Image 1 (cartoon, each protein chain N blue to C red):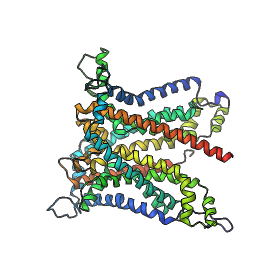
Image 2: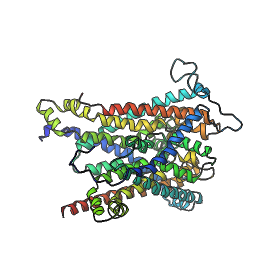
Image 3: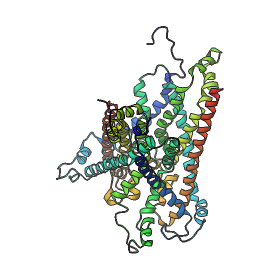
Image 4: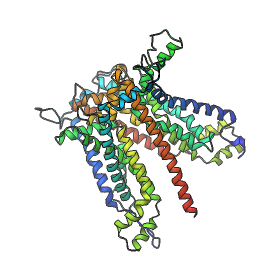
Length: 276
Length: 302
């Protein structure tokens, strides 16, 4: 292709490159500000800097309310990850069958939570809890998180299942394995990468979820996002929040990089295996 | 039916396996929405000592009895809130799509080898906590926050006089929502641009089209499905948004999602009236989905 047919000239490429750089600054500025002021020795995040300190980190790591909130969120997030992934695996196995009763309706139902506003999901579950005579609880919140996580797990696991060589499972059946054994020995290991991604997504979605939690959390209890939200209203608590926020940002960026590196490795191995 | 002689694709699973997840979503999503519907017409209520009898009374409260000179200045305060926040949502979705388009264009046509890295860089902040990023903006935009104190330090404004519109305004709500959605909106636009057959651009060039004409006649129309998808990606979640206006908005930026939340868990709760608003929101989102579904399946060549 000659350069004149390229959709971007040199000037166009340069100005769009500049635009990209500006957007990156815009996207990362809040993260940088959080980290920078988490080390600032002042209760108010404002310029000029008052001096370097790590005391907000120490305060955060010794705050029982915060630690309880993180523990509760981790518990709910882990429950959500496992339950939603299990439902996602079932749904994907079901949808990959030749014949499914009411397939279009079932498929629509499985992705419906993506388009129902979170506030409607929260309100609906609140009314449901009232109807069955129990109030808000951490268990109800986990159940609500599963509702909004299932579409993601299906969208992660189903495409992976579709690329699997179905003939492998068939060979296992021909060699005398029953359906369960064939699933466990062949399908399951080949699905592992998708299941791991699904667990990670399920955990992070729940760990960061505020909207539904604001309806279903019992009074006096807090998940991590509820703690952040309440803390943002209390000025004295802000430096501590910035310290926690820095830790969370560092962790999640690490996770993104690790996932990307892992994916690259896995794909190279697949290519190498395919070539060998 | 499969044509005779052709082998059926071997099955990996069995159809009945979808039953548990489908039943779960039916019980915890569809059924609750039906309950909201029953609440909205007073067939159920959480009020004690009140007999639930079918009534459109709360719907009557929501739809304006008298229309003022403007659709957001009627006799129904919650209707006004709805119209105002829908308007703001559309503006935010348009602005976000406009901001994301050049980004997608750069990623699709301005990069080659480092494309996946450049894409990852803009997507990575999306994987950090949304609430924490909103909190960061609150810290930056506050009256004695980072922006204002920087202006004072640089002697661009007299000390102690913050810029009044930085926070608790539609500006701050719009800025934070656009910030949150830009990378997400760029993604479908980028995908639709990547799908464009480069030979079409060559053909345009061979037929004498300059870069601008080629963009106008080829690239832009073919990227429209991605644009519509990105626009809807913002529109749908923003229509029910209540976290961002709570954190960086003010009394003047009361949004429909906040109204629903207040009617259910606020001090002056009224579940039956809140249910009317929730049903209305669900209907509006459903209509938006149906409309965008039609736009997405339209053939751009026609």
